[in-house]
Image (cartoon, rainbow, N blue to C red; front, side, top):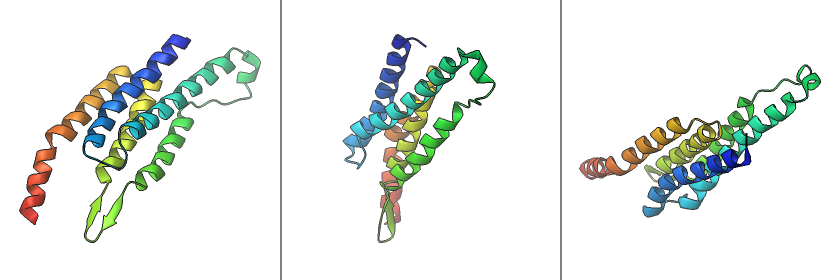
Amino acid sequence: MTDLTIALRLLTAAFLSGLIGYERERHGRAAGLRTHILVALGSCLTVVVSESMQSHLLEFGAIVDTIRLDPTRLGAGVLAGIGFLGAGTIMRHRSSVKGLTTAATLWLVANIGLAVGGGFLFSAIATTAIALACLFLLAPFKHRNVSRHR
């Protein structure tokens, strides 16, 4: 993987997650633009480093027989760690729970970062578009249902 490819993947992850983070920031949520970008950027870097390590070690043919490489292991670790970060955004106040959508978007941008890092750009872009549509277009329905239940 070239340095240009790595830079483009990192920038793409930052841009796509920034779109989702901007929506969270506009609504004054605990995790906004910068947090979402940093989560996706870290996830993307994890996959890029994992793939680079694998290809770098494959250059040394004798080592491949003794080292078992699984690039998906680092990604699984990222998602487990994001669970703790997302849990920190969830707050309970009396009978209501706040922060679930923000926690879900943090988990989502971590996955977007993993996808971009792995080179699955179409999947990452499509996921970002669907997530933005969900966040922007479905928000009015949420507010109507909350008003109705009160």
